[in-house]
Length: 221
Length: 221
DNA sequence: TATTGTGAAAGGGTTCACAGCG
DNA sequence: CGCTGTGAACCCTTTCACAATA
Image 1 (cartoon, chains in turn orange, green, cyan, blue):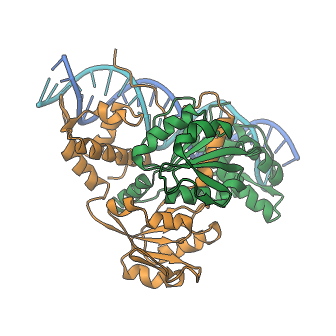
Image 2: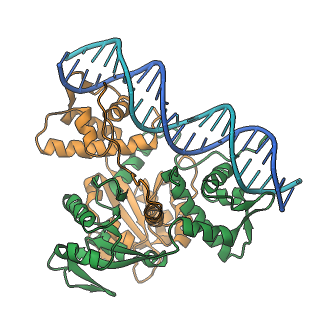
Image 3: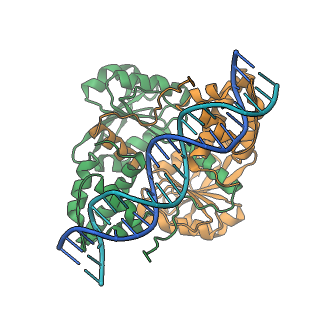
């Protein structure tokens, strides 16, 4: 089951969110068209994405909102909880581990590490900042599966290596530096500088800046 | 000049960073191979990306580090400064506008807005948090060209609309919500939930999780 | 000999268009 | 008649492979 592209998965995540909203509003069924509407995607794309995992809809009717949401929840691996360690308790790290949506989505921050002695020992809510030197010991102990790298760029690779050594299977990197990890470790990168620079590029080279927007779905004719 | 793909631009941004590092280390020339090494890209990809903008290298020798860096700097629109407004002075907003790399890269945060009366008027460094109600007035006055949305999801679209109305040409969205903006406004989204969920997906469907890793470049044979 | 620049080939993702079904 | 599921067509991006050149 993994001829699934990165972009398909990201879209699933959006469909999931839309379904949560529609369900909260009391909607019972939804068509691929409506599911596509919010977010500049074509109905065909929605159907293709979903069909990679099964047949969840009913021809002529659309998809049952609650059912599809639960299916996506399972597909995305959100029907369980994940133990997360955040490394780096600077501004980004702090924003991250105090972010409510984290826990809400099933991601529990079970450890926060930093190298700065002034930060080590500080309590923030229920979490105490630990010395990063104890990562190798604490991460396996607390069954950490996902590591978030929120350190300065110079320390990022070293921290990633330590996380991998500690048995972490996925890394979310916020440091502005490309990381190298073994093939079996999943890696996602959020790079502010890249985002900002690609924005600057778009503004400088403005001609038809139609990023992230799509032409409206055309009906067959 | 815009048959340039989003992914090409993001890679340019990485090349630029690599060149900065290599230049700092005193390197004079660099081959597409070395430029590719850091970051799981093929040499051919590097050459194709660059060749979309001109011929910057010398056959047999490679690229002059300083020259190529300056060219990329101009291509990426980093040879000038950009006025940025951050909307939302919560944890994410605060992490953003106090982020040094921002200014270092040519992005000046000239305004920070929030809707919470307890935050309005607070000074953080050189910036005073303004009432978001004054966005329409202050953003054009301060020549804001890029807006950063760091609000709760419920307010994000409304804020984006206000930014667009105030003449902003690019938006960087951190709210977990797809935004709709006119085609001529560039939009980039950083969605933590999507990143985390795509990571969870990868771990659940582990088989061959070779995201962001590339097979090593093979020599012609 | 080393390495770029680039057409051509390959690969992958998106859209089309329609059969199948409610 | 409406809408899904999907093979085929299309299009865009990446990789190959080699002529050009230092």
